[in-house]
Length: 293
Image (tube, rainbow, N blue to C red):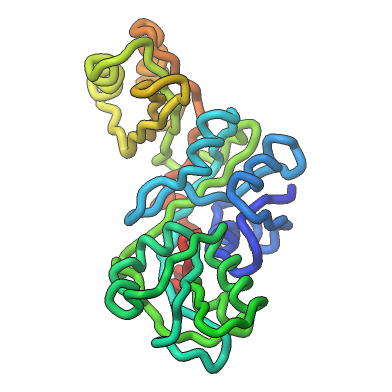
């Protein structure tokens, strides 16, 4: 199976792919310029699965991933969380005080906002499809006054000079990545799974959502994440992306999901898979050389 992922070489998504449970470190992968392009390759059947960023502990969800998960009927089969560390890099000989433009992924720019305001207050922040793409663009241009925020590894890959390290606002920041495919590929049971659902409500108002959540809480099922996402039909109309603790085969989970129909809500099953805390393979964790995507 070939995995799609966010490219080019040097993205943190590629590091996450290598850490995904059940995937071999040398799993064939194909880089794509954007998250949307990687997920579209899976939807079309060009790639068997994709590894994409879903959420960051500092900047929240990744919109491109959420859009396709909600609308393209893809499924989640595994997850991994990775620490992130950012570096400012530019062509060799660049002076930090002369930097006027900084390229990076929007999540990385957001996580480094305080450092940029303090050290490069007059520099323009320019969004890129990925941190590695920003580093490659800066290297290809070779222009004075332009820098990228990316992983230290990207500087090595693209021949850039690191001007500053550890410039993110939160040293403990992590990004959650998921492995996505057209169908659900049930992984081996690990004893503590997460189940992801997309829930559509019958009507509007807080009472509808409270009723849905009560079906889980009344059965002792913990919700670990809930995220609203607009349907695009009209203002104020949302679907809800919900993560619950438990496997789809657990009787209480199946009962709760079945009960939603009685409320007029629709629940689309996205997948059950080991939570990263229990899925992590043995051995030392990788060095934090990361980027947001």
